[in-house]
Image (tube, rainbow, N blue to C red; front, side, top):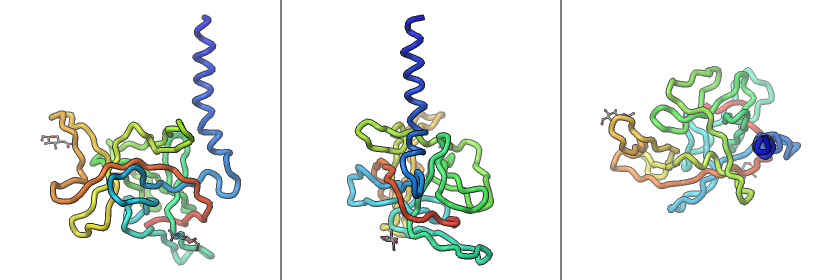
Length: 198
Ligand SMILES: *[C@@H]1O[C@H](CO)[C@@H](O)[C@H](O)[C@H]1NC(C)=O
Ligand SMILES: *[C@@H]1O[C@H](CO)[C@@H](O)[C@H](O)[C@H]1NC(C)=O
């Protein structure tokens, strides 16, 4: 019975972390950008949402439907975390959720659709809080891979183990393009959210 108390207090410590994050700022509560860290390449700065995935070297594709009065385009891609899940910082009804596709690409739902393919991973948010840093789920292995069409546009992929062969696969690599390992660090964001990202 003596062991029970320390275990319980440990549990309450770990569950206390997310709510502290929630209360930590007032103006734009909890919004953050995800910034490239620990790349072996010169690539750095925040990720941009564009056409369903996340990029460096492509602009943020925020969008304002004509039917939304006073809508302002956001020039940055910011995120919110809720209950272990990751969302784009948008106002569009239904929101836009971020997930890892079954192919391993960091992806987001389009406006007005909550559909996420079976086999995706949505529970992305755990932070390594060791030195006050906030790295997005440090148990996952993130890569930036450029596209064959444009060597300056890089998007985020995660490697996985093929259950049949046991080989470690990064579907963002086609053997011709370049890929570099990264970590993603949450940095507080004080600017405006977007209506939606297209
Ligand atoms: C977005 O706009 C703000 C205010 O004009 C500016 O300070 C900031 O540098 C811009 N960010 C990007 C990523 O262009
Ligand atoms: C796993 O490897 C097998 C054999 O190479 C391949 O047919 C299959 O598509 C792979 N599965 C995934 C999810 O990559």
